Image (cartoon, rainbow over all chains, first blue to last red; front, side, top):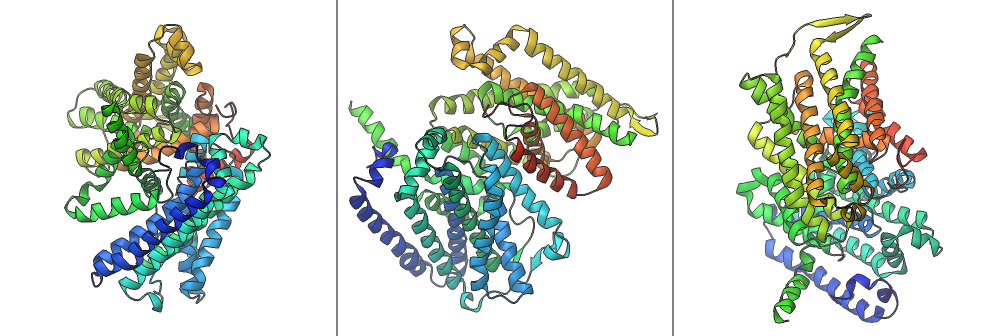
Length: 331
Length: 286
């Protein structure tokens, strides 16, 4: 599979589908056991690490959305904006209108998705660096918009004292909820990836004009990817609002949007679990090296440059790169 | 009213340097330089140290700013961008690399320069009065020097041999190579000049607005706005984008002090891009 992966878009949708589905189910079961049994068992009673892992799961969930927009060939630097929107939706509904968190969580995803729909429809006409620039600007717009929202968004002081749902009282509950959310996210993105829609996405990444000439309604498909991505960002933001019990216009900056991209890249853009691997790796490593957190941005920067220079296809491509070296040495 | 015009002119001229620099890099090596605002910030700090702290002449500060940022740009191109562009299969790779260099400069600057807002004393004190508006000589200096530099750059690109090589590269890399253009050296030169323009813009504007180590991303975003308005990779578009943004800012801030101005600029930009995704003068998809 490893070597043929790049050209496997069509194969995955037809020929090797049954075998791949079995592999997928097995891989997913392993992932579920890891997140729902092994990790909680290892860190039971260790609230600090459960919080760290829960945060990593939520960041991975938001990054999965970004991954989906990468799969249609768009560089999406707007995920921070949608996380912010999701956070505010939950904050406002919970504190002012007495919504329960579990009612406002899907609403946060839906509203973020609707905003993604309204914004995405025009801006998805842009490609390449143009799309990257406009999504970067969107992250800034969201911050400014909530900053200027007057009493509705509480301007710079943000919304604090968001009640934490009774079901999510302990850090273990929060971790498990985040992990379940992440697994759902993996399933959603995986479903897209192996379905004919996923094949359409990959076709669009390789050439939108070509895809359009085959009769694919590219405007609808790219909007679909962006809306799902935005909705996932909104849900992640809502969960974060519940975990941290506050949200500010500056809760998510351009750097956060960039980090979501970094997680995808670090893991690898060819694998659905790429963003999961990337975000857990970075976040866990940086917690372990807590002494150097002062240098976090510097290390992120160096890491980004090193990965681009030496592992441009992400950490998950390491086995392939290593076997490439071996073959060359053998030859 | 006159005041808005004066401020708009000064800002536009300075922004033109930023926009031209990022356009040069974009058109020559097809890279969106995310670190452009950071290079602006480095240039500003060079002037702060040379002129503000060591009390050497302002011109010396500008020269140091240009040289340091040019060297940073050339090194980035040679050791980071050139190898990745040669081997990468996805356009995203070089862009994320650019983001990495921006973060690198940001964090190094934070350690090297601290996070205080810095300013420098006026080079030429005094204020000129024109038809009811005030134009400090300091701003006049920024305006004049910026316009001269824009003129020099346009002349350089249009009429000199390396300038022609750069334009050839922007049109067609392979054809330029076949015509005997040293593509590697010209790319490096283009990146260095683009970076130096950002550094010079920062070195000039520090005398008016001051600088802090965290100023980079905001400037990069301004640069992006300008090339989105004008059209990426088009010199005329960069100049037009600079004028539009400079005046939008000066008008906006005189009516609505605070962050509403930028919110409106962003919204207007998105509405504009719906009508014309390639910018005013850009060709569709470069």
